[in-house]
Structure formats: C-alpha cells, structure tokens
Image (cartoon, rainbow, N blue to C red; front, side, top):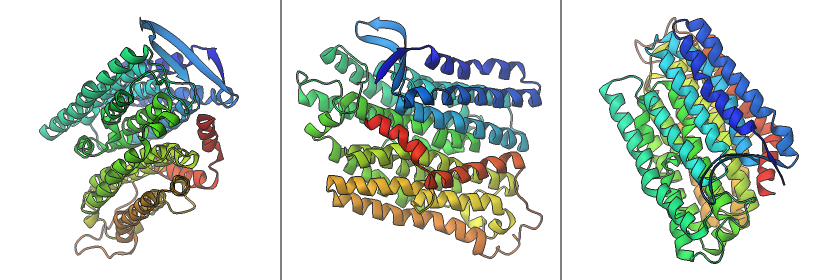
Length: 491
C-alpha cells in the first residue's frame, strides 16, 4: 500500500459543498437551477470515479488539513473502502437529483432552492465521512451531516415535520455526543492516536490498553453511530418518513443511514481490527445483538400498511446485515457485509423512488389501496418487484450476492444460529414485500377505485427508478467490480 499526499479528497468535498452557490444564485430560475443541480452531481461523481485506477493500483491518497493535538489531526484519505462508498453515494446523487427535480416540480413543493442546497451539503458531508482518515475527522463530518439533513426532514414545516426533526436531532446528535465523544477522549488518552489503521487486521489498540477499556470504547462506538438504526436507537428513522420521498431516498440509500453503517464498520475494521475484536470476544456478541434488529424490524414491517413506513422498517433490518457480516470476522462474512452497502443502496433507492412515483401518480400511500396499480404503472411496479427480489436475496439480483456471502461467512464462523437468523429474515422479507407486488399486479381494484385514467409518474422520475433497478440486476450478474473494492479492504 503506497501513501501519496494529494488534495483530491479535499477538492471532491469542496466541489459538493460549493455546489450550493450556483444553486442559490439560480433559485428564481428553476430550469437553470436544475442544470446546476445535475451538473454539480455529475462533476463530483466523475472526479470520484477518476480515483479508481489509483486505488486499484494500491495507492492511498491522503490530505492533512490541521493539527488539533499531537497525534490528533483533521485529515482525509481515500482508500478502497472509502472510495466504494463515495462512488455509490455520488453516483446515486445524480439519479436522486433528476428524481427530486421531477418530484418537487410535480407536487409544486415550496422552498425548493433551500431543499437542494441542504441536499448538496449533506452529500458533501457524506463524502467527508467516506474520506476521513481518523475518528476525529469522521466525527466532525458526521455531525455536519446530522445538522444539514434536519431542514430536509422538517421540510414540510408542519407540526408533524418539526416533531420528526426534533426526534431526528435528539437521537443522532444525542447519541454521538454521549457516546462518540467519550470514545474519542478515551482512545486519545490511552493511545495518543486517533488515526485509522493501515489494514483491517490489527487496529490501533496495543496490548498496553486494558482490555476492558477497549471493550468500553467499542460499545460506545457501536451505540454512538445511531444513524445505523440498531434497535433501540432506531425510532428517529420511521419518524423521518414525514419528509418528502427524495429525502427518504437520501436518508435510506445515499447518505444518512449508509453513513451510519459505514462509520460503524469503518471503526470495527480499521480502529479495532479483526484480531483485536476476535481476541476480546467482540464479534459474535455483536452479530447476535444486531440479529435482534434484523428479525424484530422485519416483524414490525409486516404490520405496516403505509408503504414508506414498511420500507423504513425494512431499512432498519437490512442495515444490520452489514454490521452482522463484518462482526462474523471471516473474509466471506466481511465481504457480504461490505458489498451490501452498495447492494442495499441501489435496491432501496429504487423502492423509495417507486413509493414517490406511486404517490405523485395516484396520491396513494397505503398498500391496501394499491390493488391493480401495477397494471396501470407497469414500469414503476416492475422496478419495485426487481428491487424487492434484491432485498429478499433472490438471484439474479444484487441482494443475492449479499446473502450468498453472509451464508458462507456464517459457515466459516461455524455459526448455525446466524444461518437460522438469515433464513428467518429471508422468509420475513418475502412476507412484507410479496403482498405489495401481488396486490399491484394480480388483485382486483376495489369498488369505485378502478384507477381509470391513471398513468405513470413523469419520465424524469420513472427513468431514474428503472435505471437503479437495472443496475441492481447488473450487480447480481457482474459483482466483480464492487468486489474489487472489498478485496482491497481485506488486503
């Protein structure tokens, strides 16, 4: 692994953040504003993608910004794990930009310029998390993301929206301040260092640090990143569904929850390391603990008639697959966990795009009202069916790759209990996704609700959801590109 000083990580974050200025200046000209929104997203993605050859070639790009204390720096780095997350987030930003322009315009939403400004800041903060070289830098960008997404959650400016926003900040800021800050102080006190390790094996904690202190720091980190939505720190996520659907897509697929599980797994692998977690007995307890979230959230999803609420609890369950895979501490398990960061992103953004398209076209939010809509909106519900198969883990869609590696990782670890969790979860996935698809395509419309005259949402919304569904299929057939990043993490 070759380290090279480079301004590239800083430039990428700056480009995303600086995108707010042309968006603000063009605020009174929707057509021009839309061009700037898409242009900034494309520019950021192209710049991120341009780093792939260097990272695949074994380089790590670093950029030191400021010294806080000896051994504590504001510092950036681009490595395989960070670049995979940044590629997914910046690529889906393009899709979400097109979709959001269509959604906000179709519903004539208020304060659209403010919406897109904070959207850009949120993506910039997510990229900052992806490119953080240590826990201190990651924490700072993590907090910027929490603050910048509050106006998006509370966008409707209703009492319900403000209440959801308060819950959102209470959970996310409260947990990070109460848990992550003490973890930073304890780590610095005992090690004098906050940098992520060069590899996933050893971590930064030497034998000189008391084992119980390391265990305490680990628990603080596990609960501190509440964006991972591990139960019981999950309640902010369903509450945030009051926000417009593009925000839900941002929360679930592009930035917020993905930043949570990325931060958690980054710390597990590069702060503690596989060997330390194994020697201290941290892996399997974590895997079984998050298994509770996987099963319980899926059971709650079964009870939800509101489509976005069902998808929200599905996200809570699916996020814990990522942590579970890494907690298995086997190469196959870690591979399954990390690849699910991308697999879940493409599939879940498709599902939320579909939910928004259904609402724009039919003004329906509840699954019980969607009988026969699939015959009137075949592209939207076809994409929903594809993404559902991915979430279930059926071949040949992306989610199958996740389940395959998680099963192999469980076998490697000799954990029959985890295999049973994965089987039970898959059955529950079928239980809450299959009825939506069945109602849409095979159930007869209810009396007086034939949907005559109903058609697909605007093309600017339908094309992105079809593209993201298609990419989920492509990943299922050709996972090698993303698996190259995972191999880079494992060394």
